[in-house]
Image (tube, rainbow, N blue to C red; front, side, top):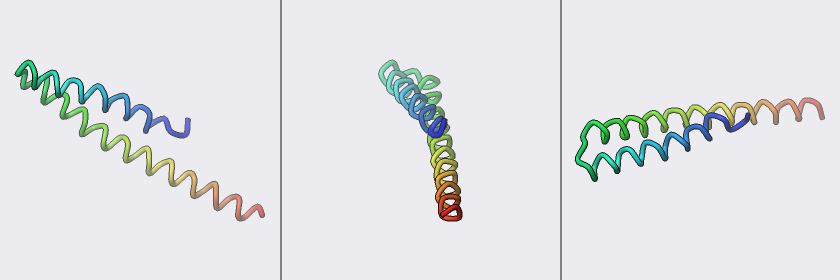
Length: 68
């Protein structure tokens, strides 16, 4: 799947945000920290997915130009 890492990242982003907010509401610092850590991981995963997709698109464009 072309956008797999980005889609997984969006799911983790929601999960992390919910955990972080729930931790704030319940004053559970461990839950809040866990949510924050999830959000950091998401940023890395989405960045990797975006970079991987853009590289793939560049290679496809190059292949199309060569084939023309």
